[in-house]
Length: 134
Image (cartoon, rainbow, N blue to C red; front, side):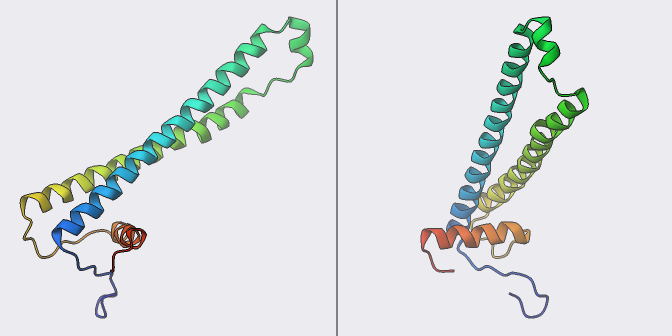
């Protein structure tokens, strides 16, 4: 922590910073893949349930409950739309990481960079995971 402005200050070599930033980027990409697989599983489940419901005879359909359309809409919002919004946020973060990585690759002697606190915290966490000193 910086004593004057109360901000996090992390001192690293450019190689370590690049390594940490690439690790964070790969972790973000794997999170996107995980979210996409959850969306796919949800859509498969919904289509299987709908196919099963449509295969019932009219009499069985009458006695079998079918969720109202507004319940389906809320489920879709939670399981699909919100997850796509999260994917878009992660993609923006990855684009920012790409910019920072590009700057560090072009200017490896760069002495100072200003990064958001969440990225610095992730860099510190990745160093702790690898057992490197901070």
